[in-house]
Length: 518
Image (tube, rainbow, N blue to C red; front, side, top):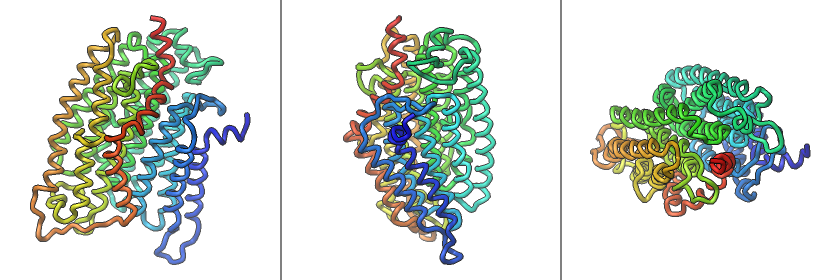
């Protein structure tokens, strides 16, 4: 193994790893005064992500290579690096003001470790590596929730999230053991052109065997927890409410992105064969329909903005699961309007920006020295804080799918990919029905999104309860970047789609072979 070649192939990941360790060690430096913390840790984390993002942008789209055992560098790796590090940069900016002095080093190192886990999930080519990568995304978030606020709700949320996360991890690992045993028990490698792999074993042993189906369902159940998909969504509202708003924006992106990437890899093992995996596809179909419907319906009943956005996050997972069911298009047959995985990847990055922007606004204003959370706290915001109100309106309009925001394109791509499947697809009719359910749910969701905007612009501000800006300059830069991103990506979606398409092709090779044989 050529060490220099391995480091070159995984340079952004090495930068994050070294940066996270340096930030953590910087916390050991004694402060000049007792009330000060290691002030360099936040800027160090920001520089780390910025350097890793710069290296990713300057590098060419990686071709498939397996220099490191258990990892496969591919265009999917390149896309997740680009989108994950961009949103990661905004996450660090929006979180610079959050931790108390004595916890800054641990706080920012946990963000970097979680971001590293996302990047490794995209490269994982072994079930064990995939499991550890997903857990590297999740475990730091348990710590971040409890560090983000000196509040009993934060501790309660962290404990609840930890135990449910451990249960989901156990189910996923149990499912992996079924997959390993049912597909020959010779390897845990996901794909390999030169030796034994699970993707070749499914063709030889059959993707529709009972044990393989059970294993895939158990593994997907663990992944559904990361997505906050029904029935593993119950933690989301309480955890989102208990954590600080910028950390809630992180929870809505990093674990969810890792979950969808992992689900795509697992379905790729079975060649996206809807005909032989009908039980699995129907389970995902039912979960997607319930996820978007329950998320939108329950959000209508909420008055706490963070809980509204938590149920909104659940609903958006349902939309993205449509793209997961559609799967990748055959190479050369169009962009994200025909390719479910490309549409899902585009939507995920756009969702990360608009969701973080909405939570950043909640973190940027306070009433009675506390960050706002309830709808009544936003009354008359357009009068007291017009720029923050405008930023919130743009991000919420994007979540709703209203032009001219990138959220509209994300939904168009997702729903169009379902409508574009050919009549020969064994799951064509259910996919079209699911897309119709998604369109109807988007209309239902507009009600609570418009309620947030109407509260900011139509309600008269209270004379006694003024709002004051908090959070500092870094938070406002992060919020501005989120808002501008959802507008620019509407005008120039090619900034993402030109990388999303090769990433989808990277998980479609087996599907091409399968369809060619039919």
